[in-house]
Every structure is written in structure tokens, then in C-alpha cells.
Length: 205
Image (cartoon, rainbow, N blue to C red):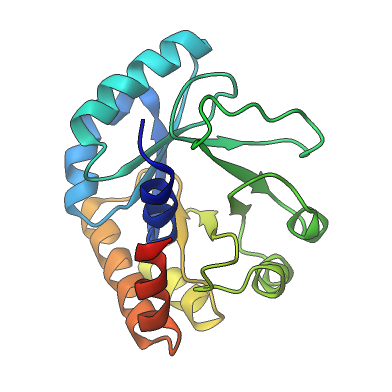
């Protein structure tokens, strides 16, 4: 288990996330961490108990280098990414667990929910605009949000230009592409007028 402050700070400082099957994580984490990935969201096809067991094994080895999440409600872990409406009871495995919510429409972005961060499924302009209004990027008080999709570096550059500061890559991008996207996001934080102040506050959150 990781302390609340540490988890919150680490989440705020995440720029680049990827999603991959839980069964592939052990063989791919080293390369992804080296390419600049901050958050890995694993997708599981096994039950909650087995998901937690596998997550624990991965977290022991890689938890200091990357933030590890899974998508199974009811399984133990530090970060869980869920789907569905927030009216569903959201039990946290421990008091410090961070909950992410995958959303795909503007209405969901504006809904008050117990989630700690959002994953925007797709890069529709209206979805990004809604997220920027409800949770301004690089604001320590706002929920972090990641734009999710199969993005090339050029596409990520365009997302950065409209205000996105965090991306979750789906599919199987090459490590060179992942590294280039990581650099683009890092540079966007440094160029953002709020960037330095945000970094200082995020570390203390």
C-alpha cells in the first residue's frame, strides 16, 4: 500500500499512460518505463482475486517506476479505472485507492462523481472542451484527465495545441513513438505558463 500523499502526487505528475493486457505487462513494462510512461492501465480477463495477485507481483517489481492500475472493481490495488455511471457503488480496496472513470460524452464529464481522475475515450473537440472547463489542466485542485486513443506523435501534438496535457495510448505503439510522445507532453508542461507552479504544488499534494 502506498501513502495517500504519494499516490495523489504521483497521479498529478503523470503525463503519459498506456493500456495493455495484464498478461503482457510483465514482458513490456521495462521498455515502457524506459520510454517515459508514467501510468500503465492493465486490462484483466481473470477474476478479482487473481487480478489482485498479479497486480501485487507487478507492483513489487515496477511500482516505484510506474503507477500501475487495473480495471477490475473489487480487486485490490492502488489505482483502478472503472466504466459505468458513478451511481454504482464504488468500493475502494483501501482508503488511499485512486479511482479513474472512463467517459465518452460531455454529460459524463460534468457529472459530480467520487472518481479521482478521468479517461476521455476519444479526442472529440467537445469532449476535450468540456474537460478543460470542468477540470482545467495543470490545476492541482482539478481532476486529472487523459485523452485516450491510438495516437501518433503528430496527433498528440495537435491535442497539446488545443490544451490537452495528458494522454493514454491504446493499441500497441512502438517504443520509439512512445518516447517521442513522452517528450512532446513533457515539453508542453514546461511551455505551459502554469507548469512550474503546478509541479511544485503537485509534489506537495
